[in-house]
Image (cartoon, rainbow, N blue to C red; front, side, top):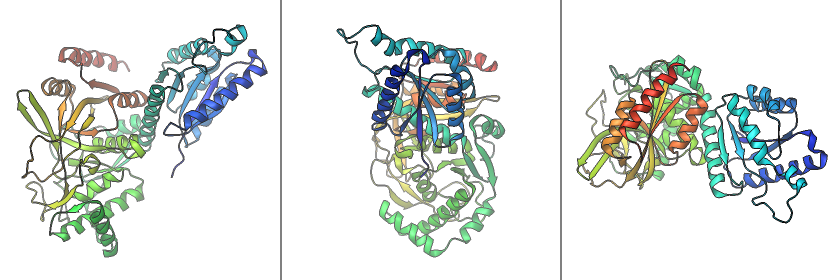
Length: 488
């Protein structure tokens, strides 16, 4: 497993004398050690920086050390901000300004000038914050007492965002064929995506995949089939269809791993030499942390992998999703999301079933096996990344997933039903006005704040549809953003 950690850099200056600096270092080490016990990744104390050179050196080292996924700074004392200019100018890793202090309370009897000289984070963090603003840094600012649950949760979320940033900057997407013909939103500027987001997006022929499938051994297929039998309920007599999906999965995974790819896409219009569109194969690959995009949608495939990496255990409950149909009964408005075959079982509310059914679209010669399940209830978001022509826009919307209000016995696909925020009608109007795609990533453990932080670090636009959104205010935001982003 790759080592992942975050660096804790503390600001001070030499004027305080050695005794104060030793105390600052001791306390900073204690804070880093204690926080590391409750954060998802270790927070490693690096230095109490007292000069421009110390700051520049540690920032350059952070850039070159792959295990460092971000830098957290704090000023226990006053740290003159001009010392930070060169280091911040060089820093390429995500950055969080932690505005806290070692002691929770002011000690009424003990406070004197010696105490004030040592405990002046309120002084130091404001000077430190100015230079971040002056340099126009895309930083995360987290204020509060360092032992408080709220601060730990916010810092934990930011760390998970940084993992998503790291995955993005090393993302390779394997496209099997092109995108679905005549579809607009699945198009996009791959050069811009690589420049801004770090994604390498390239195409492999479906014939290459078929050749890889032919090299998969029967023993490999039987082994994966055995795993399917353990993880899922088999609800079909067509065992050959399941084993064919296993062969597809093994071949896709081998090709991706060989190229270092973390996400893939395909389309039902291009299945040259294949009997089935990968269904169960794609679903199980997503359960392992790979991203997927249907109809050749490489943007949503990469975003699926990124958001899964931002979730619990770096493979959270995030999945490729598509808006299918609405329930518009007054007072009971719901969206129904699904896809023909490919929804990740991390969303499942119960043990998924493997079934085979006819797929009435595309070039399938045999009925493909797929996982069928209902999504679990809970708070979630849907996220869509679109190419606006000259810039990228990320759209997120808060939703409340529910147990489906009907059984839908004749719909043999994985599906999720949800209430959109602020309502189906207003939310839909805002989503359409923003240009949101019919494909999205649905996530239970990544929220809109995390996606906002990710977009800020990556340098792209983000708009959010939530409980308090009105169409009028949202439309104005889009107009203002159009003006602002033309000058970026």
